[in-house]
Length: 173
Image 1 (cartoon, rainbow, N blue to C red):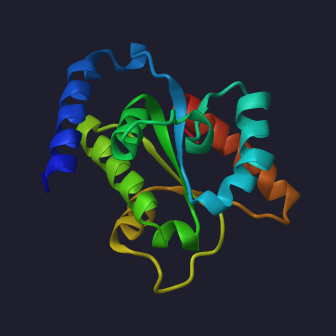
Image 2 (image 1 turned 60 degrees about the horizontal axis):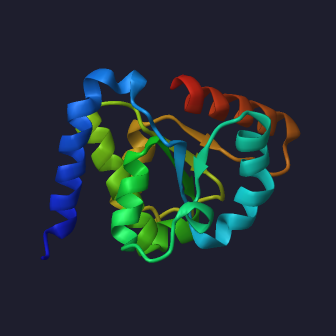
């Protein structure tokens, strides 16, 4: 019972590897799974959804909207990460402290390792205080290029959206 998450992740990784040869044709339900802290939902609804879904036609998996009630939360998270082409990590101080966000990050990294494909897109949404970054987040930021949201810089925001859309569509910033 204690190893249920590893077994579940291994099972999904095995299923995913069986489809890896046809990855470009794999029928993903979502372009990106959005891993975030609940307090950041306002930013998602005011900025992320209008830019990515409405303006650019991308399909995002957002827990508050897309998770169906009644399922086991861990299984729903893993299933939706597997059914998403990428995982978008919205990093904030609260994200780092959240156990659920830690679980979403772990499942995203497992998919990264299982598929060998660049599936994790990190966004620093709010400044992260020094000393608050745990090992998993540190490894993502150390080994992957990431985007940073600048709330008061219009030009930086235009570049941010262009890079994020290109990354989610093509895998290239």
